[in-house]
Every structure is written in structure tokens, then in C-alpha cells.
Length: 262
Image 1 (cartoon, helix red, strand yellow):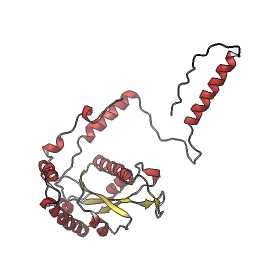
Image 2 (cartoon, rainbow, N blue to C red):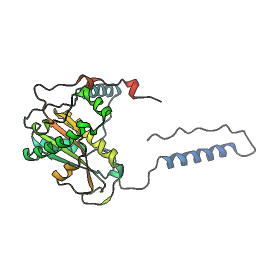
Image 3 (cartoon, helix red, strand yellow):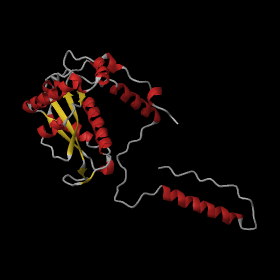
Image 4 (cartoon, rainbow, N blue to C red):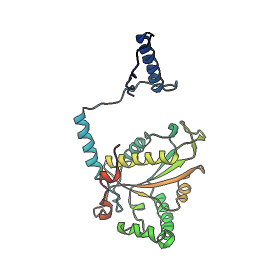
């Protein structure tokens, strides 16, 4: 962190020693600056893996990442081509590096490859989705989904090689098995899920986020404990040869519409 710029107020000369006055003010300013930039005592190590790039290279990397991530799309037609388990493992490890409240890492990723388990997931998901599309969602929600062409039929839940059920944890800690209170759980799991989607895209796979309502059946199928809650189901694999991207999904807000610089 950069230290604050120390400024000196105008001091009207007095009978006192002016140099002494300036020295005292400087000392007080420096003490405040040190206090503002000093953390509480804790176990830590020097930052050794940070890489600084020249500004022009930073621009190139930022633009390159933007151009690459623009190719990420939510796909609803998957190939059944196999994806090696180690690729999924590394993507999940990448997700596990995400920041989290108090570093408790309140997430669990259940990677489903078994055809039998995927069949169970599809059956339960379609059962719940039928009620959703039959009216439980309400007209406004259903109207918002129409441009995407979605319905209660979810064949990709069996066709795709991998389903990743993501769970949030109310209790936990920095080590597995701990039962402390977790903080900022929803935000933390959301960030980790974003990391996972990006990692899968970077590996050359396509994804779809799926949130059937309710999702409690995932906890039972994946044998998760009661203090965990299903957060999202992520489908991952190769796109089918006839995969498409809805025109509606290709409309992205401009920078001026999503950001402000103060």
C-alpha cells in the first residue's frame, strides 16, 4: 500500500522555534501514516509470486483476456465425448483458490461422471422444472426465458460428460471438518463458481449454469450433509456439433451501461 502524501499546514511564525514546530507536525503525520498502513500482528510470509508487467503488456493481456472470455457462451446442446477427470480436477482446484470470508472456503464441488447418477439428476431436475414451466414461475419470469428457448426437457444432464453440483456450507473453517460459522457464504461461493466457469472455459470446455427450483434433491443424490445447501449445478463438456447460441444471449451491455469511474 502506498503511504499517504504528507502535507504541512501554513504556520504563522511565533516566538517558539519554528523548526521545532515543523518537526513535531512531521512526526505526528508520520505516526498516523504508519498506523494506517500497519495491520494487526499475524503470521504471514512475503509476497513472492506476484508478477508485474510493463503497462503496454498489461493492456495487451487485458484485451486478450476480454477477447477470449467473450467466446464463453451458455450452451444447451452437449456432446457425450469424454473429458479426462484430471482436467476437471484442475479446474476445481482453480475454483478453490477464490477469495472467501475469513478464508473459510465454504464450498464443496461434487463432480458427477456416473451415468446412473446423472440419470437421477435429470429425472429429479425435469420433475421440478415441469412444475416451474407449468406456471409456478409466473408469467413475467417465463416471458423473460422465452428468447432463450428453454423448457422442462434437460437432455444435456445425461449427454454431457460432467455435472458439477456446487454446495455452500453454513459451518466450516480453514481446515476440513471444522464447524465454525462461515461468513459471506453466498458471495464467496459465487466468486468460486465464477472462477470455475472461467477455468473450464480456459481449458477448452463449454458450460451451462443450471438452477432447478428447488435444488434440495442434489443434496440427497450427492450425499451431502444437512448443513450444506445446493447452490448451482454446472454442466461441462464439449459442445454438440449442432450447438447454438441464442441471439438474446449475445446482447451484452456496453461499458457505459455497466460501469462508472469516479
